[in-house]
Image (tube, rainbow, N blue to C red; front, side):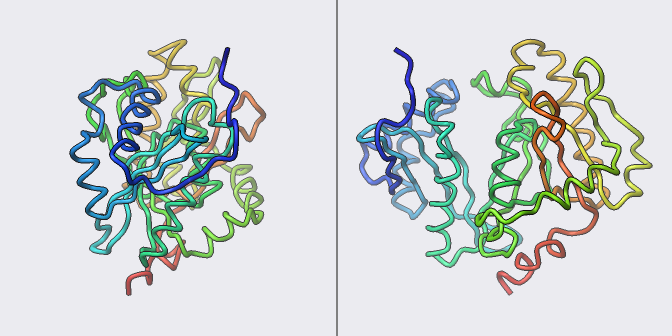
Amino acid sequence: MPETGPKSAITIRDLKAFSELKMVEALEKEVWGVSDLDVIPMTLAVATREAGSIWLGAFDGRELVGFAFAFLGLESNSLMLHSHMLAVRQAYRDSDLGYKLKLAQRERALALRIREITWTFDPLQSKNAHLNFDKLGVVSSSYKVDFYGPETSSVLHRNSTDRLWVRWPLASRRVQDRLQRKEHRTHALEALATLVPLVRFHAGGTPERTDLSAALKRQRIAIEIPSDIGDVEQRDPALAREWRLATRWAFTEALAAGFFVAEFCRTVRGKQGPGVYILEKGTIEEYVPELQRAWA
């Protein structure tokens, strides 16, 4: 019989036992379909846990159904936490578990007096963009081409491994407002009403590039993506590649010209429509002042 989701209340707690880290190994393979080569080695998992990295597990009874792994790093010479991996079993993805694991990471980081968490995600993944920008309040000014190489052993990484590097200013007013679900969409939707996207959904679902020089003269730039790139990759890998190259061009050109990624609106034209990123001209530190003074 198919799995139907949580059987009981989900418990999120720190992973401590070797046996729990072994469950992470199995979940990595299940979620990403990776070979042994691309799984975190157990020796490294144990060492990073003992050295103070944050390993969180989500349990349904005794069953591990999600995890998040983050380690300490430096961002602009300041201490931060980098969230390297977060995975949730398929049957549990409609229960906000990824969001709850992020909140648990935030709680651990603030307890350590760390004010920022970074991570990367595929900018063509609409659901992840919605979680990161709309629900959590991240910002980004860095696009990484083939971050993990042209591909990995995972079927999810065959259309390159381009990533947005995002910053989560944990104690900022922006993030607190998102976590309290305060209204913020009006400004974004008003901006979209007047913008011609730098990459937009064309007839037949193909990406259409518009005039770059005109876009760079504006205060805001929009970039559209498919609502479900996974479906596109299965149906038409060549079209998925077109979307990758078009959005790679748009993000890299815009960020190099002094824009940063501020918002994401999912399916603003209805269920079958594209999602839309909004990029603003300026610096992240001006947009989120707490990033400027967090480590002053």
